[in-house]
Length: 260
Length: 267
Image (cartoon, rainbow over all chains, first blue to last red; front, side, top):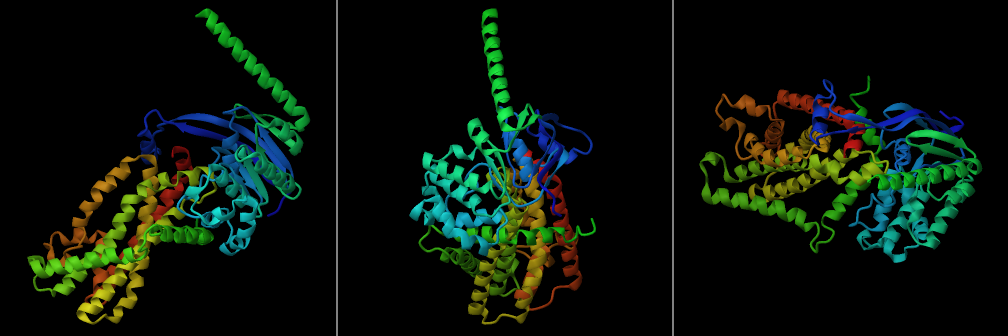
C-alpha cells in the first residue's frame, strides 16, 4: 500500500488514566470489564493532519501541550484512545537519545541492538558500523563499555545510529539540545540533508531554527491543533500568543499578590 | 482472528533479529567482567550436583531407599534444572517491564520480545546444567540412553509453558509491584508442590492427581524417564502437557497483548 502521505493522523485523541490509588491500576486490569477505576485525563483531542512524503514539519506548543504524547502515538509507542494514525515507511524516532543503551556493553554492541530495535537486520547494521563510528566521532570509545561514556558521547552515538538506519521518516524530539556546538551543527546539517529525501517531523522550542527548516508547522495548544500552515505566518502568531499568556500570568500573580 | 494460534510465532519471527541480538548481549554480558567467564556457568551446577551426590551417598536418606544413589542424585538434579528455569522466570517476570521501562517508553521497542529473550536465556543456562548432568552421568554410570536425543521434544512445549507464564506475570507485574513480592515468596514454596526431590509415585495415592496438575512436575517426570530410566513417557501425559502448555502460551500472549497498550501508560 503506497500513498502520497507519510503520516496521516485522523481525529487522534489520547486520554491518560488517572488513578487515585496506586492499587486501582491492578483492580482496573482485573475487573475493568465491570467497573471503571480511573478518571480520564485528555492530553490530546481530535488531532487531524496529513504529512506528505518528503515534507518537513515542525510541531510547536508550550510545555504540556501534548507534543511528546503526539510523537509517541505516531511512533506507535502508545496507542491513541480515539481516532487512528497511519504511517507509510520506516520510522527512526530520536526521542530521548541514548535512553535505551546498556552501560555494560560497548558502543558497537549497543549499536547492533539499537539497529535491531529500529528493524534492521544484523548484516545491514554490521555493514554500517564503521559509518556510525565515524559520524559519532567517539574514536576508540566505540569499543569501550558505554558506562565510560560522557553524556555527550552517548547522545552522539544515539544520533549516529538513528541517522544510519535508512529511515523514511525521521522523528526528532528536541534531541539537538544535547552535545556540544559542533555536534549540534552536524546534526542540524544531517537533518537539513535528510529533508531533501525523507520526511521529517521535528519538535523544538528553537523557533528560528524551525522557521528555516520546516515547510509547515503544526501549533498544538492544550491538546488540540490550533493552527497548521506556513512557519512564517504561524510562528509570529505563536510568539505573540505565548507573550500574551505570560503577561496574563504575570498580571494574575501581581493581582493575587495585592489581594493577599 | 483465524491465525491467533500462530500469531505469537509470527511476531517473534518478525523480530527475530532483535531477539537474537538481545539474547547474545545477555549471554555475553553475564560473565563479561569475570576472569573465569563461562567456567562459572558450568561450575555452579557441577558443584551443586556433586554436593547432592555426596550428601545422598553419606546420608542415604529414607526417601532414596531402593533407588541407586547416582540415579537418585541425577533424578533430583533433573528436577532442579527444570524447576530452576521456572523459578528464575517466575520470580523475575513481574519486574521485567519495569527494568525495560526506558526501552518501552522512549523507543519503538516491541515489549513482547522480552518474554522470548528471558525464556531463551533461562533455557540456555538450564542447558548448561543439563550438559553437566550428562557428563557426570557418563562418569558415574558410564552410560547414557539414546532416549536423551528426545529431550528437545520435552523442552519445546516446556518453553511454550514458560513463555505464557512470563507474558502473564510480566503484564500483571506492570500494574502492581505486589505481584513481584508475591512470586518471590511463593516460588520457593512451589518447590514442595513439585516433584523435585521426590517422585510422584512416592506420594499418597489421594494426593497424586493434584500434584500432576503441576505441569512443571510432569515435565520433570518426563525428563527423568528419558534421561535416567531410558524409557518413553506416557504418550497421553505428553500430549496433555503439550496441549496444556500451548493453551497457557496462547493465554499468556493474549493477556499481554490485551494490556500492552495500557501498560505503556501505567509504567
